[in-house]
Amino acid sequence: MDCCNNKVPWYKKLAGVLFGIGNCHGEVNQNTHGLEKIALIGSPNVGKSVIFNRLTGAYVTVSNYPGTTVEVSRGKGIIGGAQYEIIDTPGMYSLMCITEEEKVTKDLLFREKPKALLHVIDAKNINRMLPLTIQMIEAGSPVILVLNIMDEAERMGLTIDVEGLQKELGIPVISTIAALNKGIDELKERVDEYVKSA
Ligand SMILES: Nc1nc2c(ncn2[C@@H]2O[C@H](COP(=O)(O)OP(=O)(O)OP(=O)(O)O)[C@@H](O)[C@H]2O)c(=O)[nH]1
Ligand SMILES: [Mg+2]
Image (cartoon, rainbow, N blue to C red; front, side, top):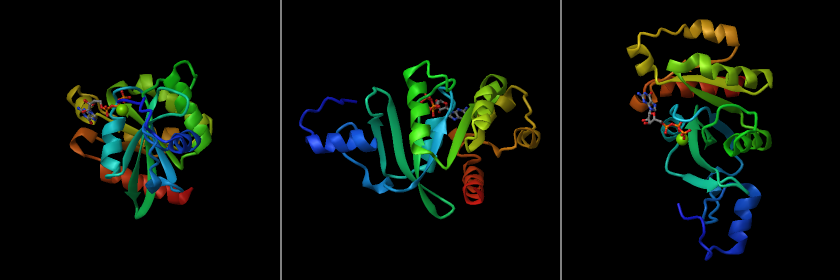
């Protein structure tokens, strides 16, 4: 994406920098202004963007997070009859702020205070990815765990005790096959319940 368009008026660029919601051409997406936020976070390649596309409609913007080269996508989604700004963050492994992506995600969560964080993990690699879930639960974040790529996990013969995991962690756990649109309706229902009970 070309982010060096000098024809963008200064005030649009400023709006993008101040609010972090414009695209790289400085166009501010008015449609998500003032909406409660739901963020997708997790390691690279776990299906965050596929889930983002399932949850959002036509109004999607991609912008560089202010002051960085890291891209963040934002779109409007309707869950349980309410409109939300859905945020797709770059893949990262922890909130230790080692990579620029990790710094952006941590800063974004801190500044924008989403109502729910959907931690998307690859169901084949639960052990490797759960530490971040636990880190966020311990930090008091509103985490929902999404076990995606369940089709491949099942093909490998893995069975996951979703109920048990849910009880153990004390947070909602939902399994999905986002690529096939499976589990997305349940995910929306659980997010709706979670946000309304918060
Ligand atoms: N088999 C299978 N593949 C999936 C599923 N969900 C997503 N994928 C595939 O996984 C790959 C990565 O999906 P993305 O949505 O780009 O992953 P991401 O988490 O956004 O990755 P980053 O943006 O790099 O952090 C794509 O090829 C998807 O088609 C699923 O449930 N099952
Ligand atoms: Mg992505």
